[in-house]
Image 1: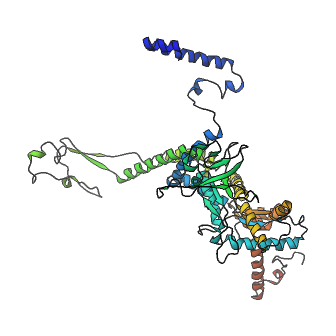
Image 2: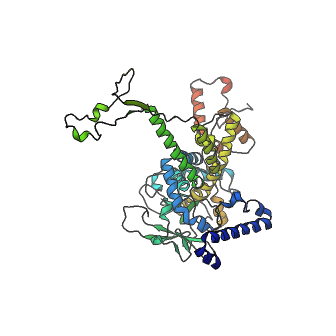
Length: 525
């Protein structure tokens, strides 16, 4: 409103308001008439879009300043809305399962090793790593082994938007390796003394340099939200060591925009939908409970004698207590009512017949945002085999992507630090590891295998795995892990022992008693 409009508004407010409205309408008309391209569509000023409030902001304004509230609400949904809990645990179970297992894959040709020598080296390293990973001594808190730490870090990442880990060295009896894994919740990384922004270089506990590179993190010594502490202190930890380049802090997050330094919970786009769905579900459940109780109300035209206006004029002995007006419903019960009383029954009309269809519709939208088909989200497969398998395959595109992220950002860095310690202590022989980065990379090659995508038809899945191995598209080791059947070499050894025991017991027919060294039938014989 300009100066003239303000002066007019003091004398004739309605006239001044009409001037302002007319001026704004004229601006919209001019913009619409002169717009091109997206200006005629998504960026237009049509009536259907006038109420759309939007504003362009940086990643700091759109994301960084909102992560704390998103984190709080995401955790609340996980603790109180079954659909949110199921979504996160579905991801955790399919991506991690019982843990991603190491399968060492060194570049033996570059290292001038034979295939047999490489296999022996890989077997030794896997044995050493499993000794460390299966023990809870690998955990700073000494509560979880490495495979359990994987699922904890991943679930925290999904729920809070990001998760952090450091790799301190702590000596413990009975364990030759001193490297440990310490997980931190996202809240622990924050600005010292809860400052909003420090010199534009520390935002939400992440410190960057003039180029935008993350150089350090600021860890609160206690959880900032804890009510058990009177004061708090922060410690600065550089992301990489200055001299060695060793990684000091592992940061798990999913980036959505350039210049983003903190992640957001995976439930962030559907927080409102899940909360409203939770409220609706609670309301329907309560209405169904009330309906199941078959509540009846006794109404009286004269009111309750025990609380009516004549109570004061009646002696205490003559007053009627509430116990005289308690009625019970039961099979074949006959209840006599006093004159002027009537019975009204509560009929909330529950269960609501449209409840299931409505919830399914919302779940489809939630599943789309989370990249989980609603059949997988609800664990409800009622379609054909082809449709159910298509839903699983679509979900597994996301599961495999997140598995690859966790393997690259969490498992592999920890394994490389473990390998460096083992080589430095002489438990693992790897010449050139500390002198040539290319040799180091050749020794660090590894696969991280997890659970398979499930088997709607086990026979078809096994046949498909067999074909992949025969055509060289996969390995027996990988397929064994993904089918959930343990380790191939251990299985192969046990098969050989079993077949020998069957032959000794006379349980194998003569024509079946021709096995090769690996425990499989020798077709040439």
